[in-house]
Length: 279
Length: 290
Image: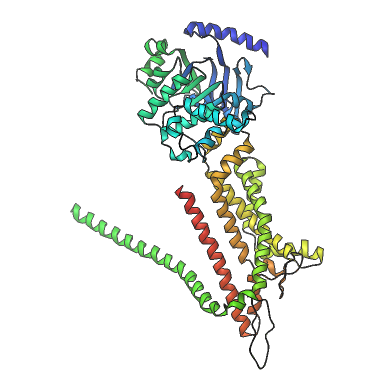
């Protein structure tokens, strides 16, 4: 197993050098990752590196497997019958699809924010505190501090500090999404996955969330799926462009520093997509 | 030529439309007639039996000949119904809710499919068959008619209703809520307990109330299990009286006073079921408003 990993690491280092990604270290890697829904191959041979404390964006048209790839990174597919994964995902060079790896432990280190705000039918406080019981035993004051800190990081504290006991559904859509982000970062994961986090939000709320992502990237490794190319260009350090191959499986066409992908794409398909000729 | 033809078509469409409207409104009316008739007739016949003694006294033999006729009351049947249905509810609730959780949260395997099919079959089972089964399994073995045997028969009738309602209500909870908890590292059972069930709570309560209303009105399975009792009884290991049972037995009596009490018991039963149904509506409306 370790031979396999080193062998493949060498290969990707070359690829990384070619695409010009410069990073201190790599937090999360995928190696020849394939996901099958029954017999349908949803993504094909994905080999990607996600640098530590940076924002990596996955762009591409609908059906290109972006969300499938993202959900594979914290084993969200595990509960769906008929889904199988081949290849490997490495978190700090440790495989997360190993036989002795508990998916629950993986998800405690890799959090997720979803397309639509999905707060629980609970108070604002209880929403943010929900994951804390899995982190370990903590006192009431510790808990309060963690919730306050997470809400501050999510830029929501000033708006909700006086009504932590009201229902999360009393918040606006943008506030709800920031609450979901607070909930995800309260457990202090190492990686935060975001699946089109602003697609259900208005432009102002989108701007807030994007600023928040920038701030969070100083503490967390962020991987964001987005339909919005401007968003990828604005917030991310690295961008991977995905598309559908002839078998309708998702593949990575090109990956590199966001600036280069948007100004000087090497692959004509990437150029077609970012200039708006397709997609 | 064209406008005239269009007008003709338009007129025929209007006529068909009106005809169908009359038909649907009429059918709705026909469907409502029995309900109104039953409620009105039961009320008219039963209300005369309602006095203080009706609710505070048990059976008293009808005195023949001279003197004041003593009628007694149905307190023993009210208490019996509360005990029999209450015990049944205590058993049916955990079984039904947990089976519903299994069907909704662990679908797709063969066991779930088989259980769902069996539940549907059980829903359509005639209640007398269930009663006779309880008679053979419990009454014959213990050599004793008992409230418990009746409760067990009612459990069999209630569980499928609770199971399927719980399942349907849990399915209405969006997957995104489950995923949010799972992505935070919550184990599945904890997610179900703290996120899914609270969101479906009022719907699950609706199912329980429906099952309760169904069980409270059942007569056939009680005939062969709890038997009936003219005295106030509290032990679930003895024969007991119940409102539907009393209504059935008293209609067979030759005394007008007892026939009237049967109507009174029927009215009480109808009101209990009606109140339950109305509280179901209120619970449902609260869920939708949220």
